[in-house]
Length: 240
Length: 342
Image 1 (cartoon, each protein chain N blue to C red):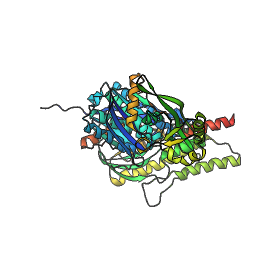
Image 2 (image 1 turned 30 degrees about the horizontal axis):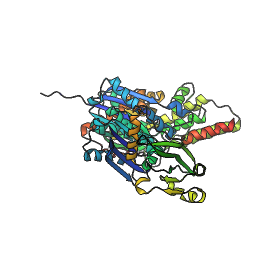
Image 3 (image 1 turned 90 degrees about the vertical axis):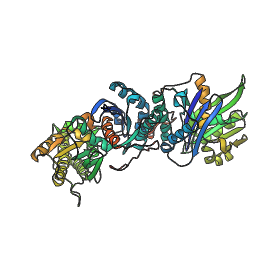
């Protein structure tokens, strides 16, 4: 089974190819460059490096959100274009689950924090356990867009040690130091931001479970309405 | 003797609020022209909301592309090149079409060509006017653009006049909103104006400083708003049809006068209009008359090729393809792309 994966949900642009249990290639760049200018040239580079025959891919895994609206759409449109041209299905992997899966095997809770501005984070809580010789990821708290203090409260209530990661971790480090009552740590540099290898690896699990969508069907999970829709909903609530 | 192979361009357009794809044969024959309009959605907000437009593009892009191929009766493997609008427009909206087009090009090896949106509008004239060839002068007027362009050759342009403030279509939208017609304003004003007296109210025709070809519509728009306020203060009834007809006449007079002045000065015998405003019936009639008086042949696209569409991008893309223009996988959306720049 061969999975091609893309993640352009945040500042990181990442592409990877996983075949069965082996990572054939990953190209990850965390630098202030436009994803629309980097993502496809990066994919082109690994195609050459591993003599990748695109037709041999079984599915395209895509970090499906949440994240930067524009970043998610660059990834989505790229994955949809590839799916259309190659006639391959897509596997939608939550950006947060992709982040958390990098810490597969830990006995602590994993809490990715993506900075969503305005004191909010895109977050969720995950844990891992071995089932019949394979690692399984459990969702302890569903992904959501909430105030950072709500996430801290949720972690404290669970009362277990937590590992934080994601671009929201440094942004809210002060708040965590102030309000966390359970022990916590931060994931190190090689596994604390988006990684297409992780999206591919988890995508392979989903693909095996038959969790695929057509390229035409896929659209990002933003977890937030657009500002215009929020304001309109607010105005309507205000008048009624 | 080798047989000349047909050039089939798959074109994709997502610069504003229409998701569109088309297949164009040899630059002039439209095999399919699929447009998914979002207009009803944006009507709720009185104008295009960029984030909503971008989200809708992502929902529709694959279906629109597939439908364009199916309706043309071709497969992706038959396509010679992929043309995509990469600017100007809403950056988030443009990125959907650009990213999808690049991915398809990457996966198939079909060459990619980034096309300027305005170049597309101008090229819409080639679809139904098979005899039209450069050089000619073209007025591009839409919700986002008002340009007077000398089309020297295919893909060679010189902008000789532009708006200093609001685009012509923008003025239509704003006036339509002020008299309660809603969005989009162009077709609504066009319709209502037919019932009004164009000479009922005299609105100013703005001259722009030293440039003979530039436009300004914000003064006219303010004059209409002032007139409406004045009526309200005096408690006078407003005849919306008269306002629409008088406003429209003022816009058209300026567009016709500047355009035909340019045609005369530059010495061309062909003139074309393009863009959403070009589907305005009074504007067409005024140009028709003015051109025939001046002995100039007048060209205009059908309304379906005036609004944003991908067929026009396919036509422009064809001539760029013939010239050898190709874009790389690093092609980016350029929201303020200038005509004639790459």
